[in-house]
Image (tube, rainbow, N blue to C red; front, side, top):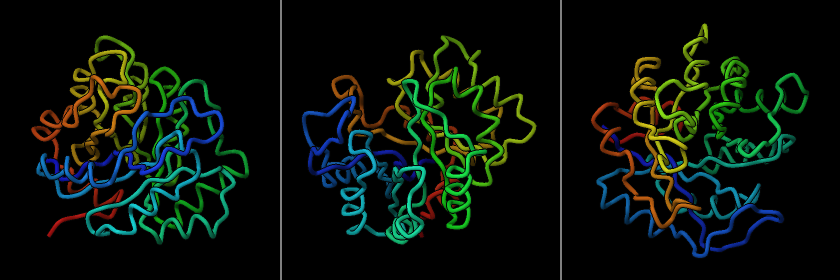
Length: 256
């Protein structure tokens, strides 16, 4: 059963950072997202910082400020050298994790470097998780690094599959891991994959317990607004997993 939309973007103003790869034409309001949740019979969700706003999390924080903390949380984006006080303030505002958007050849953070090691330690101390968006071929090589981190790691959008079948680089890497306890997966955004992701979900369910998955709408589907549906993969997820344990562990959400 799926109770939460764990991946949506909310922005009332279009204020792109310099060099943004893509800027949508219209805002994505909190009211619009809440209406879609209601239509889908969901109890709450997670606002994820959208890429074109960079590390300016102010709109995310304003949206969270008016929401029930038992049903809504946020995932922010910061610099690797984020100030400890800023990270603490994010946590106090309902942010439960940070996102690393590493697609399109972005440099992969190295935990052996002091700034990255410090950030991961802060996340651990604050009980926060790390969310990673990375294409399957590069994710395969990076996965052992992520699995060794002392914080939960959420793999975004099913690991952005690239192969037509479930023979997929990052899934092979996941199967080869000696320990997978910290790895979670977000079932979301099938249109961002280069292949039908459903066979990959089949294989993932043989590799991870069903309490390590959450579902996300990826609303408002930036770059894919014309073809995506809010409930993409929701039926498949709802029939096969229960998100209660994962949303409690990752986002501290739940329903009475």
